[in-house]
Amino acid sequence: MASGRVVHTADRTIGSRQLAALLPPEVLARPGYRALAEAVRTLILDGRVPLHVRLPAERELAEAVGASRATVTAAYDLLRESGYLHSRRGSGTFTELPAGHAPVGAHALVPDDDGIDLAIAAMGAPEGVLGEALAWAAPRLAEVARTPGYRPYGLPELRAAVADRYTRRGLPTRPDQILVTAGAQQALVLALGLLCRVGDRVMTENPTYANALDAVRHARLRTAAVAVSDRGWDMELAESALRQTEPRAAYVVPDFHNPTGSLMPVEDRQRLLAATRRAGTWLIVDETISEIALDVPRPAPLASLGSRGGADHVLTIGSLSKTHWGGLRVGWIRAGAQLITELTAVRVASDMTGSLLDQLVAIRLLADLDQGLPARLAQLRDQRSALVTALQQYTPEWRWQLPPGGLSLWVDLGEPVSSALAERAGAAGVHIGRGARFGVDPGTFEHRLRIPYTLPAARLEEGVRRLAAAFHEGVPLSPAVDRPHWVA
Image 1 (tube, one colour):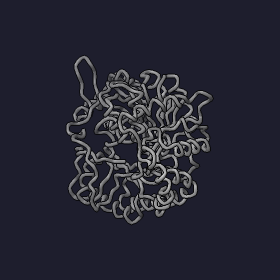
Image 2 (cartoon, one colour):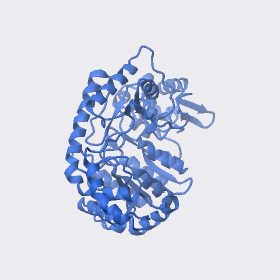
Image 3 (cartoon, rainbow, N blue to C red):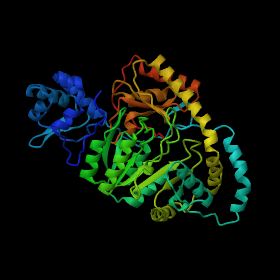
Image 4 (cartoon, rainbow, N blue to C red):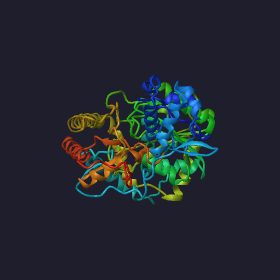
């Protein structure tokens, strides 16, 4: 498999050496034209070579890969015939996707039916925990109800509790550095709304959290994509992208990345902090999944790695959606106190305040998190094992890397049929997050599915069984993309 590098596309051009560095070693060892064409096609589908990028001239690439010009010419011709390249006289040869390959239509919410929901990477609330927290919150709600009820910054007790948790995790934090939000998604929308203007560039990972991409697009921002593979991040090229494009903001999920499950190494975190600071780029760090550490210690907050004054450009987002319950709409932003004040002004313009009942419940849940989390993680480990066992039994041809934490597997189907499979599986009562939903460029990651292990083992086994039946049906799956599904 090729490395996880991504191409910087400020000028929408990839050099011959850059492209050669992305190719698998076996292609470079024996560069036949079919193998070369297939490798380039895979890079396009996997998002490591973005769409509408000009490829190097045939002679230049031939020299870089150690092939004849005739070999590269034949590979380009094959890619043109299959719809992955097009040439413009006097301009060059550009990447694209075949007709009908890009998704169309509005995002569809997962039906509220009795099907098996593998589109949402989140669990139900821990048994009994919400009830206990509600009982604890009830008398306190009576006290809060005597006030007007508008707390745009969030309840002071909750701000203090969130700040204390950051401090205990190695990032000294004051309550005035916390804004309580209605979940992490609102936190991201507020951050983008304050920091960016229409047309600004935002660096994101590719693939990345689908709803974050929606927020970027809704804000009419341009993306600069940096690939994340099963092997993680290529910081050399991320640094290059930051240096050359100077994006206004960068959005990253360093802890058990959604959807790949990768964990960013400490040295890469330090390089990212330094590079974003040099570029004058606000760094928005989504740590919503950071507590879901299954095989490794829980990572420290990324901002804690900055030297004194070296992380003041970092906004850290978190929530209780993955540790407790998505129906409890409590999230937060951790940033400098002045920035928190400015973010709160943006928040008031949209919804004035959050639910105080939810926030009271959250105070108790945070206080008990360290006691309740081990059982939650043990349950996820068991369910992850159940999902792996089912995949090995029913779809042995699929491939994946076991993540050290997080809530899902990023499964390689071996062929670009993810959307067609999602459509066929939906008819069989299984709702699934198709790979293209997580890509910056429409139609990429069509060979991938994100499969969460957040359901009970029996439901996971049945869901995989139905997926496998849909995949192995006698009628071949079409690579054309259907409408996308909403995922979390």
